Image 1 (tube, rainbow, N blue to C red):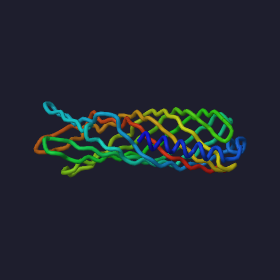
Image 2: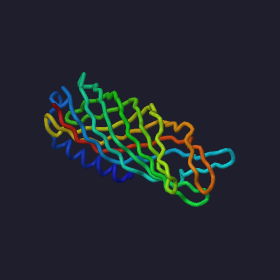
Image 3: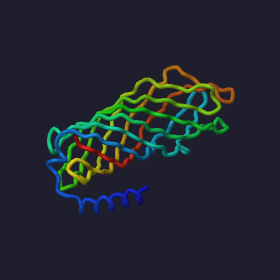
Image 4: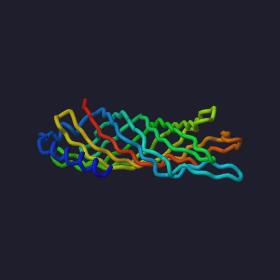
Length: 214
């Protein structure tokens, strides 16, 4: 993972050296951005009832992440961005047999970005909030569980390289905090009922970005 990110940064540094200095044109008006990459969960996810507790954090696997965003530069150093996307992860629950678990999330987010213009390169930091719509599917169970709308926070950093006055490419890393609720929904596995709680979406997203100004 680290070696891939280092390679991407090296490639982008080479592109930045060839890109024209199009700072004012690239940092004005509005833009649309497409993002694609990976989601890496970082939390323990629990299924509990009165006398049973089991986790599937040890077998949690990295999933995919994608987003489409629309942003506007209010200043060359400040932009607001609205995004909608999708990310998912996988894991397993042992009860004591193993049950694969898929969780799918649709986020709607708002991000404030503070940029540091440096020629054709724009490093930035971001902070934002979002609404997360979550579904959990446990294998060998007849139901798919839909969580209530969850509001969460995210923070991140990235870098954009302006390759033309209206186009840029970038690399973005983000950390998400969100804790969906599934109310009183319960699942039955191996003749044992579990309350679906203790589930957090906390994790990292790493995406490549392609943007066009308009």
